[in-house]
Image (cartoon, rainbow, N blue to C red; front, side, top):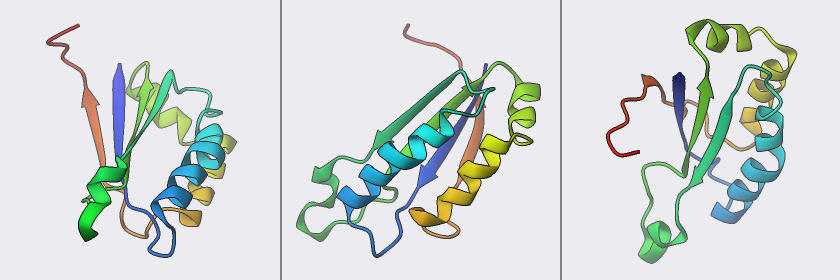
Length: 109
């Protein structure tokens, strides 16, 4: 399988809670509708990472799995994908979406 890893930073005016709520309850269900995605996981940065004025490098990571590269590329042509991309400016900081395309090598099942 092919896996995409997205590193997200929230818009500056959103609190951590607002960002996480929007991502989980609004954006997540949109992303889950992209037909080629086999698995979609959000990992939200823990509240303790923000204690004592700290700012973590990212506010969360989204991971999507596809059967193969062809399926991943085909997903970008769907109406659902267009809706997901159009929604990103509502909660993700501009220019803050590094993406890593990977294949997994399971070491510990």
